Length: 184
Image (cartoon, rainbow, N blue to C red):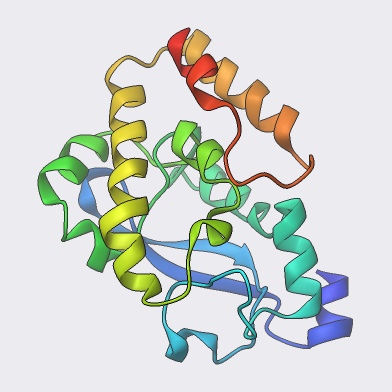
């Protein structure tokens, strides 16, 4: 928070409306990693996004921008393990899948967030929105639904341990996830 304040100024936090349990909206909290007016350029950031600040790039690489979501956990809006909450326009694209997925509280981590830990590196040049909606999002939904249909305490613990193991490890586009999910 201090680095953001000193290096980039206010605001320190970023709040965005996401869809949570029971398809109810809530405000997810993150440390601000982009220029204050970055939302007017769209919701997605590719690997060379100029709207990401120097400090923000470091926070994202280390995944420290996600720490304020612990407040969302304390408020009962999120859990540690669960499907990542999404913005409403993407939820509307897959209403049946999200209706099933969001019967549970969204989480800070799940197998899809591990698989797409460095999602911005998955984008090619061109229309980021199309790439996300037609390629990345369906795969994330598949991973999350598959996990949520068979999750339990032990599998949630494995996801937490896998998350800690990868954080703040070396950047990868996708970790070796199939080995982990086969056991769950």
